[in-house]
Image (cartoon, rainbow, N blue to C red; front, side, top):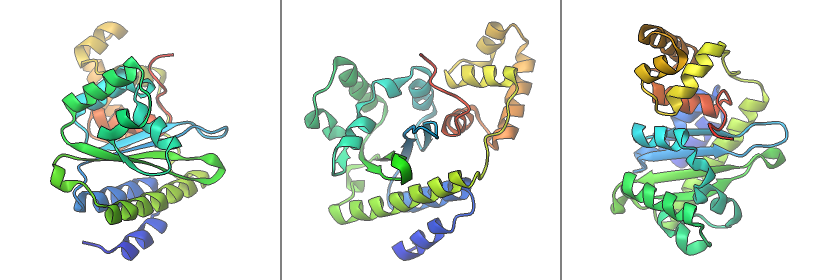
Length: 239
């Protein structure tokens, strides 16, 4: 297991956002974190983005397709609290709407275990939410480990901001039809349903999805959906 100084040095010198994400995931997985979510807030010059790892495919499609970010109270709560908190504590830390409570119930039903939530800070108010999930109670980090987690996540966020400002890895260009297919796939629609909605053959949908995967450098629709949102190719599915 790489020590903290070596991890921070590797993050500071990560040449691409893909390498940075891999380094960050490897660090947290070695320390018992099963799931990671990174929500970058929108600013005047940058769009919002979401990247995640380790969450079940069904949950990711549900979160994206049903636009759960609008009722997920955890990122917003992390943005106003000074200290990290566990997902299970959210309802005790702030007043929740019925929609917020419905989301928390849905999350408990679909995501076993618990998680840690906190904010990392970037230049020009480009802050981000970090969620670190674990399945077993024994994986819950202690206070010293939480501080280390914050340190690593903060350094990774600053490196992400620097790489983004340098214009590294611009979003790939998708055709209008590819964008339509990707948007429907992100909503959890099957290939046959997409074909019916777009009035094309299932073979055409398969071909378009393969092209999308090649352009995004991924191998499945869930990864494509996450990367597309993280890079700004896909916006919220509901107005």
